[in-house]
Image (cartoon, rainbow, N blue to C red; front, top):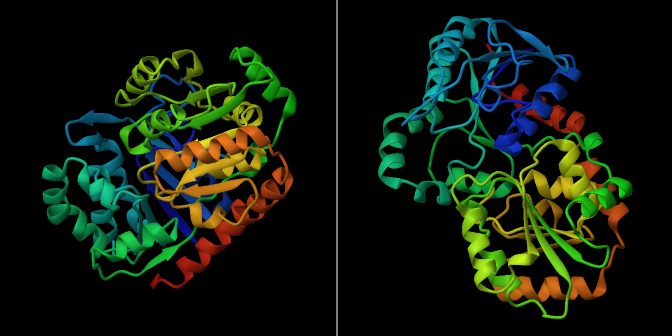
Amino acid sequence: MRILHYTGIYAPAWSYGGPPRSVANLCEGLAGLGHEVSVFTTNAGLEQDPAIATDRMVERNGVKVRYFPAHFDRMGLRSPELEAAVHAEAAHFDLIHVTGVWQPTSVAACRAARRARKPYVCSPRGALGRYSFTQKPWKKWPYYWLWERGNLAGAAALHCTSGMELEEYRRLGLRPPGFVVPNSIDLAAWRRNESAGRSWRQASGITPEEYVLLYAGRLHHKKGLDLLAAACRQLPADQAWRLVLVGVDEDGSGAVLQREFASAGLGSRLILQSGTDTTTLGAAYSGADTLVFPSRHENFGNVAVEALACGCPVLLSDQVGVADQLADLPGVAVLPREAGAWAQTLAAWMIRRDRSGRETGATAVAVRFAPAALAARMVQAYDKLDLT
């Protein structure tokens, strides 16, 4: 099968969080099964990387990738070169898989597929959830009715990464069927490394006795970091702990959290770090005692799987899509976004410091989210489409 995966952001643009990783893993998994996979994308997040060529197709881990120059305006990510390419090349593929909504570049891909009479699949990656529609609703609802609804209605199917995302899609009442295939995560890159974990703690100024709460990902209102401030204020005063945030502060949420911790007399307990590469995150997962994931809305939640693969217990909100796929594992707790419940659970974990079940959890996620297995599930979904 000749597959074009069309996405505005692609590996190794790690500063954009989980989607570039999971999309790349999916594409590489499909290529590993013998399919001819091409990616049309932009150099967003990679503009300063001299290794990223924008004038030719390159091969990355068995996938043909073409990066086009990225431009940003008040409508978001734009790339006239990318849009022109998909119109010119759409007819050469059996299937076009479009990741992302709310972007003009996605409109171009859907149009190109329809004009070439090629089936296309859309992956909204949580952007059709209730939370998304509360952000700039004055802009999103008109855009949805003018452009996005038509893009979705013309799709052969909609790919969701969790049951929660599928239900959010169904409430829109659109005709195309939806199917669930979880994010593909290359867990070979996520292994527990005790030595790296100790080095990370030492470099961060954290003593062996301190209990480390880790948050990994972009710092944004959607991620619900304000819950951590409220929960941490309720932790026992005699407990030695630190909260480490690893990620880029996109909208000032990190700065707000700093002020809240300082006003509560907990400023010294908070550490902000910017490293988002695999090596840094792997060391952080290995050195932390608990990953905290209090998101207001998350269609999936790669970091929870990555942390478990590194033997780090996870506390996540029930608004994280992957929660129902992890809730049965040891070292996982799923809670509503209520500060008292989070504080109570964290206090109990700090006292117990229970590290049992780490290997069991790591083994389980390796089986559930293996790229080869999930690529095979995606092919099964593709095979149900009319590719003629």
